[in-house]
Length: 551
Image (cartoon, rainbow, N blue to C red; front, side, top):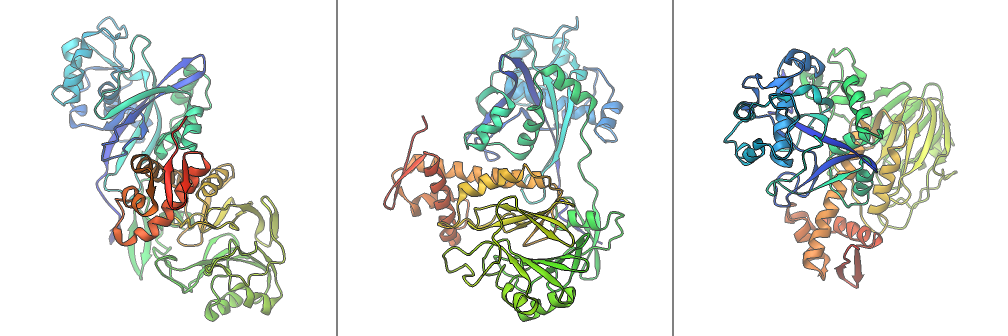
């Protein structure tokens, strides 16, 4: 039996330090150096990989035993090692050591243990040896387990990270290490999220999700009580059986078909498919069938997904290209009982099939008129143009229209409200980011509409290309973070090269992208520049771009 996407994953731990202030709860963020290979310039919590020395004895700890901690963390053993790693990393990176002396007093900034910080940082002294030298104990009962995150498959580095939280010792002050971290800030979690949204701070998805939890608390004591009483749900780590080409395979968490397999085959019998086959109908939800058009390619993946909603009468969402065989199969599945066609946008792989269905069934057509452009279906003629929040009745439930410009100015997502199932069109695709191609593509509108989706109740995403996707908030946050990270690269390249033309800026900001696709990258760079211009961070003089300093 094959196993898909199995890689080594390193255990890691982070420690969120919190304190009370006149502005409410504040949390410590460290900024990583711009020279770092991993997450350059990002704001992070103190943390890093669990070291082999972190598990060598626990005589220097106080509080719950490893068995109790491990049970809380859904581990067979070693939960305390994660906590100790978090404490050690916090000492190395922030200069804060959560420890008590032989009299059980919290140590202060003047304690001699701080003189050995560099030795611990260099690996010359373990945390256990530090505690032995200075007769210190690590009070594990002062830490609370807050969240768990496993890096999805794909990146060269993957971590199984446990997030902890504790109140900063009042008698200690933060001193970033000046090597791995170059700055630090105490900040209210809600303000940190606002600054991330505005592009002022780079943060990873786990940091963002942790901040969302923290922003609901007005003081540290309430937060700690909550965290102790409500440990997080275990992160999905169970491999799932499926089929590929008639042969059994094992899907690892994060692989493309994993979420769909878990939803459609909850007993793990291996009845789902690990690949999408054009022309093969799959019931992905109650009254919802996915039928993939036979138009695979670099931009469409396995093909464009058409969704057929209903039981006796039917709604067809994104009929796809005007392909005779695909249209005929739609008519066969619905027995010709099509009341309506709903279109997310008018790119040529999504809407042209509408004409044939309209001609054969007289169905009502919902969607927005095509903007100008060669890639648009100018023949698309809707009977109704849904506004944001408009409701469309189908035999499978109510569809809520959500205007989501960015990839296309007329793009709509549709939420099947009874099942919290989002039909995302090309706004969210599986396995790749969508093309934002000005002038119709708008990066600022794209990011804003992504944030708007976070306000909706969504359990699964049904994209126009790919399998069902679970954990929608995580997916949306990742896509936002990815775009803002690239925006920061463009902004830094602009600041360094200004004044500069688009070609030279693309070479700098997209140096990690093969030169063969710099033409496509230039369109993305232009979209970012136009967003920076709208945000007051760039100006344009003909073909030349100039940086505008932040005030």
